[in-house]
Amino acid sequence: MFGLRNAVGKWKVVALASAVAAVAFVLAPPDFIATVSGELINFFGFVIAAVLPAMALTATSLRGSGMSIKRLLQLRSALDLQMRFWAGLVIVSFIAVVFVVLMKQIVACAPNVECKPIEVFTYKGWSFDTRLSNAVLGYLFGVIFFQLANVLRGLQGLLAVNSEAAIGEAQQRFDDAMSDTSSQIAKIRNPPGYGDTIQLPENTGSR
Image (cartoon, rainbow, N blue to C red; front, side, top):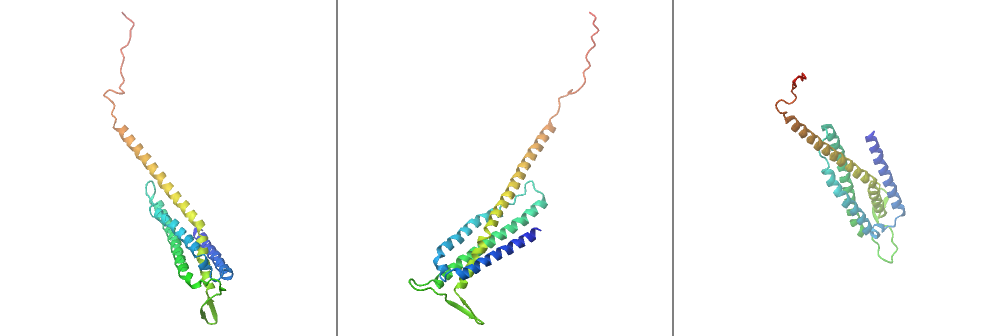
């Protein structure tokens, strides 16, 4: 069920990103990337800057105090999946930054001149112009934007893992303290005669 839910979530992100790409291809002006390149680079850079610390936190989240081997294996698998998600988000954001930098000069239009799409290449009667770059950018932006909710879920998951580890460590310290106390109590020896029954002399009432 969990794998099915993940698959549905991935296809949902792909569908939404494709919709953004289609809208960008139809509505965005040919020099859209050149016009908003600074804002786009800032956005993608922000995503990278936010995810890198989360990757470091993920790599150091697994601690074994108070956890069973089975639970540790489950957490390792979950953290590995989380690390793959972080890495994918960073890679897509980096590709988007490089794409914006490369396309900025290609799609830029001269001032005071009507900006028209520039034909990039043709294939079997199909003509591909610079509007295609808007579609590619729209898809990359959609993939990153619609994954931001999963970033929050990932951070919440890391909080749960760290909380479980902290509780396990606290429980382990408590158990160790109780064991040490029990050991100290066991070493205590009663003095000679402790607990013996003392026969008191009988009082006959004679003088």
